[in-house]
Amino acid sequence: MTPLVVTMIDYGAGDLTSVIKGLETAGADVRLATSPESVIGAEALVVPGVGHFEATRSLDADWRNAITESVKHSVPILGICLGLQFLFEGSDEAPDLPGLGLFPGRCVELSGDVKVPHVGWNTLERTRRPTRLFGGIDSGAYAYFTHSFAAPVVDRTVATTAHGGTFSSVVERGSVFGVQFHPEKSGRAGLRLLENFVNLAREST
Image (cartoon, rainbow, N blue to C red):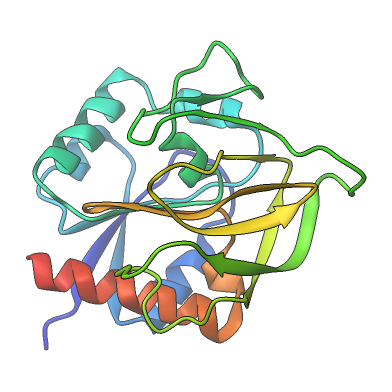
């Protein structure tokens, strides 16, 4: 079987080594995209990222056009952590900076009598089925998080996590997917999710 080539968007937001290793373990070949032109013709896209929403400012209009054109052509895309937040309309962390708007709503800071940032293991509670990305992963499975802002629960949320309030930890709409946690650091459940993404992307090529 020819390996699926996953194009990872490199915009300087975090160490990509562990994400690459996780995707390779899941059966993909990974190439880095450092310009919008290198997204053209991608079989699958991953938008990783950690840290402040301001980091997505590097993804300018040309980048956004390249990503949204890929989505229009049903290229599977997975946003991880900050990458998930970028799929929404924006974040209060950088109010003047829009997201892609592929999911409705804005990301807000975690609140309540909890430690922020939210760092460590927490559960994924399934809210919908069937779901291609979350297939084979039990509701209540643990995943590894590190973030201070989070996306709202929307009609395309397929799993939630509670830390103070409840937020979207997995979203899915057509060929667009996002996870707030780090699957590459989330043990068996995280690897299964990456395998699911690679397999569904392979089916779409």
